[in-house]
Image (cartoon, rainbow, N blue to C red; front, side, top):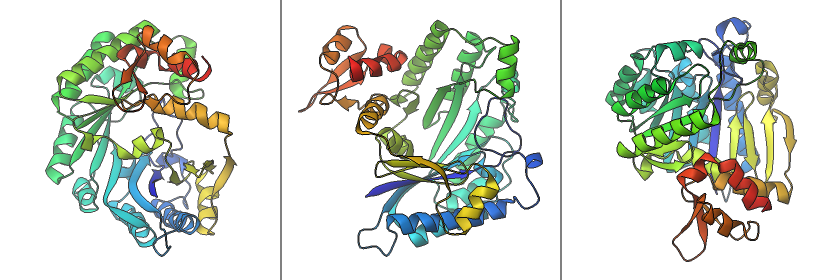
Length: 381
């Protein structure tokens, strides 16, 4: 059984104003909440996962084929600590020979030798949080880097021997203009990334950015503006040799697609290591304690550090299967969708039939803009 490990590194130099993830800036940590303590607890949770799933010595071991370090900012941690976690994975699990190891990184603040160390650990993908090429937009997002640091980081990753470089963009920052977005897309593509992600900014309650929107200091883009910017990005990415494979992701070659994230969209199983991390195994899902102390105490005691869990019903799983799968360019089979929904969606230009021995459908460009509507019609007619 192929399997993914997500490893959450919850440390950042500064909390971004839009962020609601489980992260901790230096001023939010106590003296005992160290990077080393996190690494020790992460190693312990790897052991818990191996014991629960079937590790190296099991007759039918779980084969880890993707490992994803997310955050937070994984590169805020000494690569030697990340190496210790990877060593534990390799000791406790069967690891695929072509395992995909991905690391998220900020373009700035990379200590000398960090990227070379990551390459030496077998990291094949690094994803830089570019977000925008506009200094004003970066300031609105409370990002610590400037636009000039991104090309330097990309060049450094290539020089270090990391095979695939991805750039993450944020679309729809309140106050961002069409021209700002066009400049960001052009700047990103000029660096010739192997992979590009662009996610619409969700204004999360309790964040500094949400407070500014609520006060009326900033306005969000209209749906028409958001659609126009998505179409601009898709056309520009296609012209630059990047093909969409998921609504928010483009890759230069099939080998550059993020296999770990494909596992999420294909409803595969994964175990999330770290505070606040989510897991999905055999139809059951759970989420870890978000507090560093609560999570690390449970993990170091050899227990699953879950704060809660649920087992979705068959109906809920079908909805998720459609909702996640239809986002992929490979589409979904039509054998479990609402009667009559496919013909009407084809007529409306929202999906197209794919060639092959069994009927499959995928979103058109218009369908990508209205994916939520497509899901509702496929599920309930």
